[in-house]
Length: 521
Image (cartoon, rainbow, N blue to C red; front, top):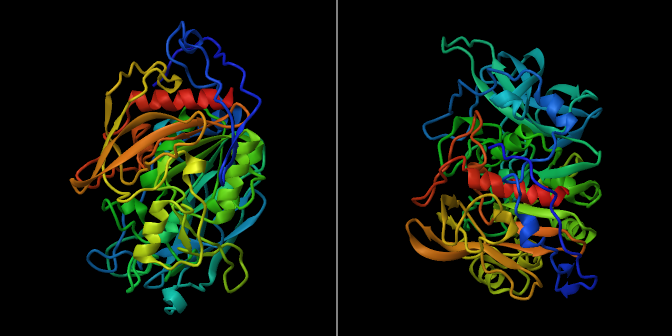
């Protein structure tokens, strides 16, 4: 969607006094423009002028061939692909720093690594940055089952690669491809995934939800924080980033998830859409948010997709962002649900092991319910509602329509939406609800009912509230928000609980433009 130019948006001055909110700092009155100023004489609000860095990058030729086309499972309904698989030594890396690629091939075979940056690229979705190899691969050992069922690979690196200075921030996929094997079946493929970050001032910082990718990762065969014999919601299992990403085990059977975590299924459509419209976006991992320093250089911080697992330092960092005037957009669901403390690997590499330490929620009833059913936990986080505007609820998974309840709000400018109008299937796979009643200025902009497996109804709500410096916190309250922004190559629409998003919708696109226009102005 390409909205037309609009008049400048004016807003009232923000009240100087801000009200204190427990556990989340101060929030003030939200400066909303007058109704006349909200309406554009020329039509809907458009995206800002294209950022030269993003525009120039996406003007470069995209790759016609970057997806996985030949993946071989270890068994029927398996989770791994032994012919070739690998992992990276870091979740994220700065230009000029090095990263190791650890790869195993079974049987031993030569292979190459093609590194692609994901983005828009005239609709192709990725650009080939370089090709490494060929290398002589060999079979590397499956790790033993360690304490708390952790599986940690100690594989020899195939190569160490220094990120060129001119590579922009983004999410990068290394496509691993073997030469033809001796069985006559031809070549095999898999991905490794890593983030290139930068430290420049940027309009938008997009946080990837890679803690959640790893929490759900069952490589090699049912080893995640959800698969412990004691139950799937306790603090009993550790998981390590020093292992490949297996196939994503829920929602759909998408071979593109091999090695790529949840990036292509739950998060890539947002990045694709932002870069299509030339927004000035930089990328980071969950582990890059243990301090607020990087994000304080940005105007807006976005939580994307399925952002469930946060180290408590991430929470504290994002509270500081809000209180410093950074706009927060939770285009995500089930976010800030579990405290997931980082610790270093056995070799001393920082932030390579996490576990489910305990619930966020403070003394709220949902946190107590989680502890009664699954605890005791060694950690407890504050009430996430006072940061996000809404909370995780029980049941937290299900599906439904996203229903407008406040059409006069400026986020709906240019959409033409009316009260009660629904965007079909946009709520899911998990969502938020139960907004705190004592956040000054909080408004519910959409709400409705989700159904778990067609039954078990639960109320969800999408909210917005003012920060202390004219900024705002918006919560879309669904993992699937980005599914209605774009449908890039390599992406499949998910489904769950007898509901599914329907794909790109101009109303979701316009709402997101409106939020970013306000955040960046």
